[in-house]
Amino acid sequence: MLPIDTIETPVLTLLPLRAEYADEMAVVLSDPGLYTFTGGAPLTAGELRARYERLIAGPPGWCNWVVWSCEEELLVGYVQATIDDGTAEIAWVIGTPWQGRGLATASAKALVDWLKRRGIGTIVAHIHPDHAASAAVATSAGLRPTERWHYGEVRWEWTA
Ligand SMILES: CC(C)(COP(=O)(O)OP(=O)(O)OC[C@H]1O[C@@H](n2cnc3c(N)ncnc32)[C@H](O)[C@@H]1OP(=O)(O)O)[C@@H](O)C(=O)NCCC(=O)NCCS
Image 1: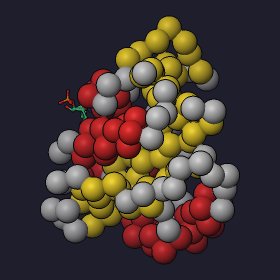
Image 2: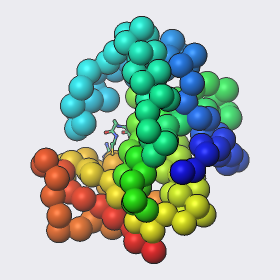
Image 3: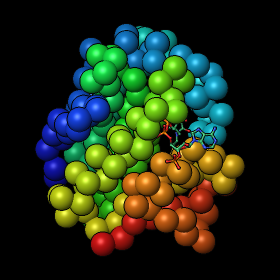
């Protein structure tokens, strides 16, 4: 399985998830509005640390990064890829104060490029049909909507 690298771009760095990021990330992810389309609610720093510990100890296909903004010198969000049998399911979240600056697009593109360079043949995201910002991120990252639905969300896909 793939070692989880640090992924660098001019505007942001994707840092492999560590439990120590939980305190800062609890603030980044504290707006209840972030969960409108995905469900869930903000977690406390302790709950987030426990989740991060579970994710880090999970199977090798669970790949998680936090997004470091080079301009702000802060953590601003996260991306994830769940890899199984040559297919990666991806997702992205940017904290509310840093949205609308292209950070999700840059993060998703960097993640998709990394997965392609490692020979992943299918990249999938599930997006709520009313979530225009996420659809724009997926489009910029090269994914296209399919006819398939999954628990009320549209399956977006890129295939080699
Ligand atoms: C979806 C999300 C990651 C977008 O983050 P972001 O950093 O603001 O995204 P970007 O700045 O890269 O913008 C992406 C695109 O969405 C568009 N956009 C931003 N806000 C929008 C809105 N409210 N309605 C419509 N389009 C919007 C931007 O114009 C841009 O489109 P373009 O590339 O055609 O110019 C962010 O809103 C988020 O974290 N939401 C909550 C978590 C979530 O739902 N994640 C998706 C799981 S798959």
